[in-house]
Length: 545
Image 1 (cartoon, rainbow, N blue to C red):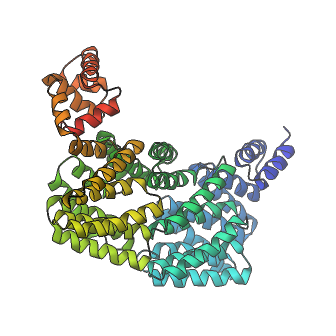
Image 2: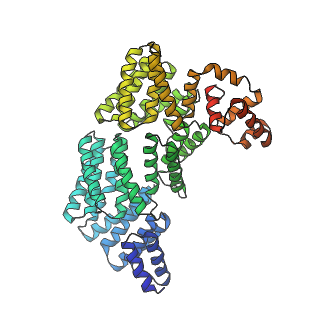
Image 3: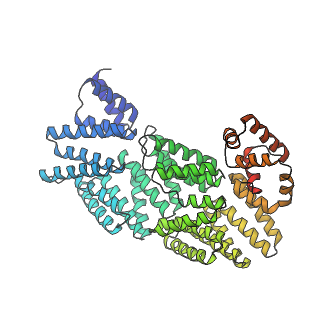
């Protein structure tokens, strides 16, 4: 391919957002002769969209030096800005700030009034949102004024998005959401550059998730998924898209598909160098394994999340509770609650805190946590949090023996769970409703609610929850079946339930894999089981784990 042809084809592919083709052709042209800095800039953008961070940084730096040598100060400052911004995003704080400072100094020394001055306000605005949202709002407002003056739709949209997120942090939620919706109109209309589109999608979805606006989060996650599918070569946003999809799928009960998406997100984000979202992907994977009763896998995922910078709470505390170690669960969750300051973080741990407190018998402290959670739910107008608070209220009343009061709160929770479409949470409330109905002597309602909860747990694959329910319904039959197992078979069954492979069980018990396989076959025959999942459920139901 002639160099000129490769260059023109590369530019054309770039305009079509065919990032991989553009990268191949521009690279081919670069192998034959030095590219102009504008084409280096295009090649850097392709490398960014393909997830090649080191190559992108090298190309940005080369473009900067070539623009500067040519005397194009504004374009040199632009290259310095993007290099600095991308370095900050990946956690290279000192280098990132250095390049942003260089971009600012270039503009100052040349006395240039440039739209870049607005862009240079964005990193500080983003960094201030969490701790000083008022200052963040002021910085984004200043950036918005610059964007309007230069009629830069990209800067205008990003600045408005920042204003919206700042307003949400200032608990002016309705105003903030209105701005985010306005920004998304520009995104879906195709008015923004690709390098901004993914960032805006991810930021808006994060904001919706923070305030538990699950309807919007689902809507924009679906839109981000469609955009990623059109940008098939792009890497930077695909992992974040998969994490959000996994969260939505988990909520709506598609756990198998959610786990697949979480694992795909891990593959995208953990590949060297690990991306900042890699910890969140592993935490989501841990949550799904915990709910499915795969405790060893959950523990491993939480450990990886922690190593990648995402604290594994409240999931790890809930895992300890599911394993029967209430003291360990309570110790870890108390520390997390004490450290959680902002509304979003507290709302995520208060429900787990109250649940563990109820299990430990401390209903007074649980009620205090539930009251705070309900206050947050009302302030955010978050249906999910209102449903959670009602379920906890009902569970507290049930633990205290007020079955009639529990029924009222649990009925409210059930109505809200159905509105949201959250089958697992609905099943948990049905289980509590069955217990309250039984206390009131209403055995028909108790039987109906137990049956509905059991079917939901079966569909979801909630092994430990189903086992707990079965232990309430069929204790005598379980005891008879268990008595048929030898002590060695009970040991093997307990290890199967923790998710261990035949080889791992053999190593743990000092047996051969063939002997372990024979024990498992005998267990299946004696108990009438057909799968390891069914064996796991039996082990939990009979407290063999």
